[in-house]
Amino acid sequence: MTLFHTKGKVAYNFTLFKEMPEFNALYQLLNVKTKTLYSEKFSIHVIDLSRIDLATEEDLHYGIDRWAKLFKTKTWEDLRMITKNNETMQKAADSLYQLNSDAVARQCAQSRADAAYWETIKNNKLRYLEEANSQLTQTIDQQASRIAELEAALAKQNK
Image (cartoon, rainbow, N blue to C red; front, side, top):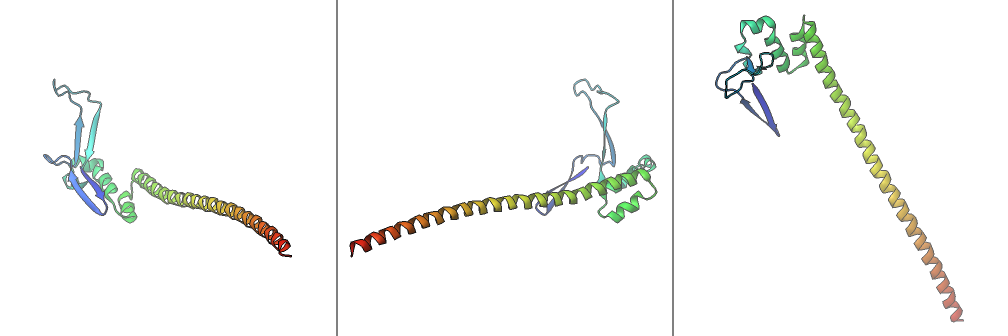
């Protein structure tokens, strides 16, 4: 199995099981001490998408290689070509398309939420500035009134 981990723009490619590369591997739980199989009913199939070339006749017969190719596609056109003539794969491709379309819808919803957030911030700031302006205007009016009183008192004294 090949996994990709990206940090920034660099992709690191590594294989989990280097000893025996397989396209389709079957793993089961085993008691290490007694070498007893846990259950034949529980198993894990691992498909190495980077080793489709190692697909067996059985893998080809069941179309596992086609499913692997489906998950490796990079374009919607390639996806349509792989799923052609297979209703189940077409449904899977439609689901992938819907999930990706939902990503666009989620991005739009996130943009709307961001716009609403910044609108709220702007409105709160505007409200704060209007209140501060009102208080300053009131203070100025009080000081202008006091100045007028003092000027009147000074004019009275100078007569």
